[in-house]
Length: 409
Image (cartoon, rainbow, N blue to C red; front, side, top):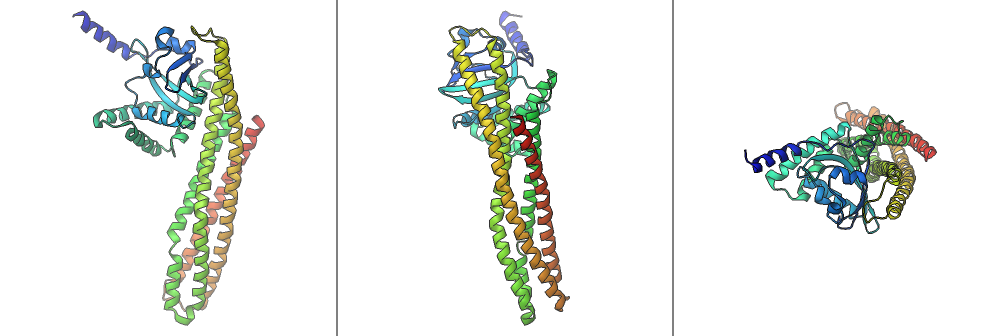
């Protein structure tokens, strides 16, 4: 076997091997706005196997692994360029061809971006690896552009139960921190635990909000049907006609409020996802500050400058996390107002239903489907009432967890 063939085999063997690093190690790197590496810590340099001379002032894509879907980097850049933080699972390639996985948290800073990375190990991570393989295969086979691939990834995340990428990255980072804490035998992070409870309550709230909306859609034609039957009954159906008109007015107002109701419920869930990601980011950034304090800075870098950058970012995200809690409280209060409006309309529906039932009993309407329509109206009112009751329970659970988080902050 010639040397070239042997080198090829050796390289292929290396590419199948993972670069080892421990769970207590955290990566840190700082880039300019174009993604050019300006500084980093010893973990980043050691695991990448590049020397500082080889890695500084080079594009961060130097360590990009060809197995990574283009979609992930498209979403990453699209998010941070808009001024928002982002999190993503990333497979990197070291200088010798070996690979290593990280969960990367990238945040915009003055003049560029700060990236903090930890070793992933959650069950979600295993799922994501399989998803990346399938998506990368699709990209190659269909020659997909990054934005088209990103759309496929977002669609797939919805199938996996995530409303959008923000919900996914918040859940992913929380799960990775929890899994890491267990491996390092750390106590449970009470803040993240309460936030995860918030996420569960918010999803419960959103599910029942959608149930109420579906119930409304399934009964929106009842007013028209009532008017038709009133007309068929002639003068005897005059009272039913009035009841139908009242119901129509209530229904139209209900339709107007329904949009705000759904939007408000969605905003609660979105704000909680954002708050969770900010809190988790602040937690990891605090750890990085502690780790970096013990390091010798890379050649040509100022330890004081990098420490200042890290500390400022950590403080900024701690403040953002605190503001996130206030934002959640505000959204919950607004949603409660929307629920109250729905409850008032539901009470009006109940009055209308009772009036219809009384009128129906006084008429010889047994040969028509009018009694069934009145029953349908009752089922609709009951469905909304039950949905609002369950939503109120979720609201109370959210408020309890917010109180706990405020006590911890």
